[in-house]
Length: 288
Image 1 (cartoon, rainbow, N blue to C red):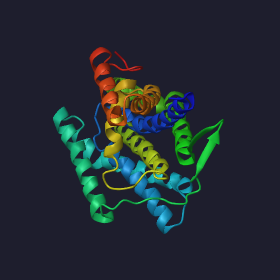
Image 2 (image 1 turned 30 degrees about the vertical axis):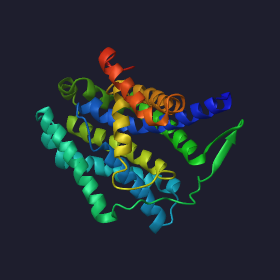
Image 3 (image 1 turned 90 degrees about the vertical axis):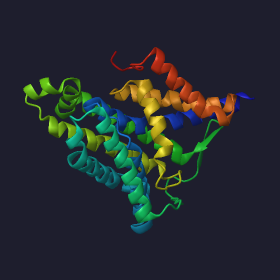
Image 4 (image 1 turned 180 degrees about the vertical axis):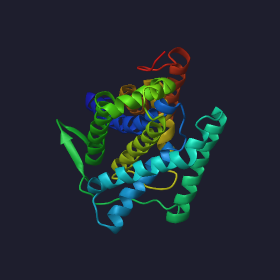
């Protein structure tokens, strides 16, 4: 095995990991603020992909141009889901919360199959199609753009949470809801904002992934399991942790597939997940 192949695989893992990180950031925001595990998070990504596809197919809008519209639509969907469903189970037992988000997952997949059929769709000839060659390393232009988008969005989310009054209020609600309410912070608005931001992050990820990944109703299942692994590895509620953990998981998956065998790459990732659960349950940057 040559060093060129190792470097190529390392770069591929890095690009893949950055995409995983963006998907996981939305999931960790929701969990960090509300302590709710959102099993329907992959379906928000799926809706983001369909939004990019239909804007391209019907309005002839390139996925990069339709990304702001996708972001707004998914933010609104996240807020709507919170107000209609999640608000009613927020103080319910954890099993009720799990069944609620799991039911949303089944509902969203069923709606996608009903309206758009289970056919595989592709966005062809987008503005980011093609390959790039950097210092002899070949990689897809869509993957590179998606990775850059993941870095930018994650950085913006982190700055929003740490440098703005609303973001600090959101962090305060995540730390102690009762204390935040005593300080005059409206927890209902913060919860709705968290769901909106989480869905928007998934939608952005979907819009970026749609340029190189097939679009179909069950596409979210390809990313949600990895997103849970990333969130656990980085630490539930930590945006920075999700970012770095996404990179680690992407590199481990690709390098494990190269060095051990492609049929074992998911087993290696899940072994990492179990190891973190047993010996470092708070994750890389999570609170003990």
